[in-house]
Image (tube, rainbow, N blue to C red; front, side, top):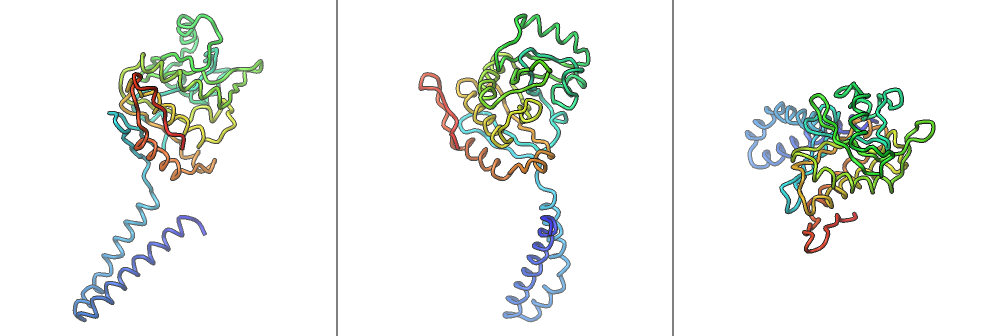
Length: 276
């Protein structure tokens, strides 16, 4: 029995259970009232159908204000390229952008394909900013594409076969450096971020572990400088289904950490996100 079928059966039982309860209570006091309620059985059915539709087509956007900051975290189920605002793009320590090397299925490959097709020109721009390659993990470059700004962050290394590899420790370091760069080089607004490192960077940790680290690092990053109005974490629906991503637990985690993490200024000591 599928989950959707269980929802439908459950709501139908709730509908007629509620109707039966109203009828029984009203018939105890007045038989005419009981008959009137029975005549409106269809209204119960309409309400039930509405509830079924809502449950079968759940919310795709969740918003969490951050304690003591004019900032929020949004969790969105969807395509990151359909969201407004700048975006974080996981890259490599030599900022290789050649489409013959970087898969067009990756976020970086898709970004260049959509907003910066002249990857040779992009490579030259990056070399001017970072002439000595490879760079350290977390090194970030702002790429102003056609209609979209991306922050390319070095989270992985390319081996001799041009295969990207990284690990969770490198990602943790990279996130801290990334937020420092953005705090000094971005316009305050919405920043979109996918679950970076979970795809072609081949980080072994589960997506739920990675995305929680993204949240923790961002909370810690805005301790002294609130450099963004909103961090929008965009999770592709395929990740939920294919990788058994527990969305409910993650939403509970974000709600808890944004509500109860106490951020203090540098004069009082560095703020740190709760390790839940």
